[in-house]
Amino acid sequence: MKHKLLNIPPIPAVLLAILSVQSGAAIAKSLFPAIGAMATASLRIGISAIILLAVFRPNLLKVSKNQWKIVIPYGLSLGAMNLIFYLAIERIPIGLAVTLEFIGPLLVAVFGSKRLIDYLWILLAMAGIVLIAPWTNNGIDLLGILFALLAGLFWAFYIVLGGKISKIMKGGEAVATGMLFASLLIIPFGFIGNGFNNLTPTFVSLGIALALLSSAIPFTLEMKALGQLPARTFSILMSLEPAAASICALLFLQEYLSFYEVLSVICVVIASIGSTLTSKSHA
Image 1 (tube, helix red, strand yellow):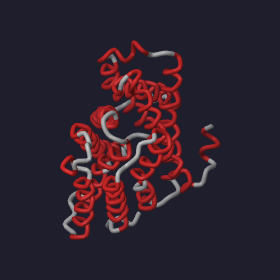
Image 2 (cartoon, helix red, strand yellow; image 1 turned 90 degrees about the vertical axis):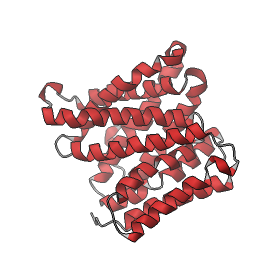
Image 3 (cartoon, helix red, strand yellow; image 1 turned 60 degrees about the horizontal axis):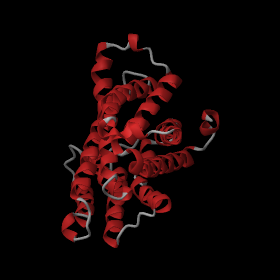
Image 4 (cartoon, helix red, strand yellow; image 1 turned 180 degrees about the horizontal axis):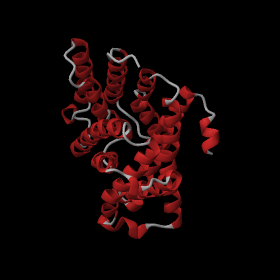
């Protein structure tokens, strides 16, 4: 499978990775009624850790002190991001959760900038949040919104720490080791609410599919694309993720967005693409 994935051209590879992740999110949400969001997150991260550790086989005994200092918080950020995101989509539509979560990487992209154009993108993204705020009387769950924004904060930490660990550790080994610590953080939450007590072979099979769709497959595709595409092109393509999330949620879960919610998604997508196009980096 990995060999076939590596034969896909870079741009289709990124688009397929996005669809894979969002399809995985839809499968995850379908498991919530049976085992709950926390058990679903634990199942996905735990199986993903096993898959990545088996594929990349990092030698933990050779990890240096400096690498541990970054890869541990990197993994904890990864685990927290996924757990809190699942708590968000338990309460609000996936498309809205991804849109709100995307504020995290958007702020990372423009952080520290003093240019007016970058503040414009931030304001546009914030306008997207205002459009789906509870005061629009559209019944959106406030706690779900807060969970999605908090997941975005951990996504920002994950991006920053991921950039640091990639400079001192091989990509596959870093992700596998990070996923190990993500699972150590998140698996105990799976026992809360007795979600694991409801596991059946069918649910475990869906957990394996979820781990493949949300971790193994997109990771392989994105690593292949990053090696062939300029960083700017890659970022623009990733900016389509909120829109892809909305489409996948509509197709798989029949989650319909209101007019203002669709506008919110559009605002964040445009803000993300705009910040990428006007970035000082031309990599």
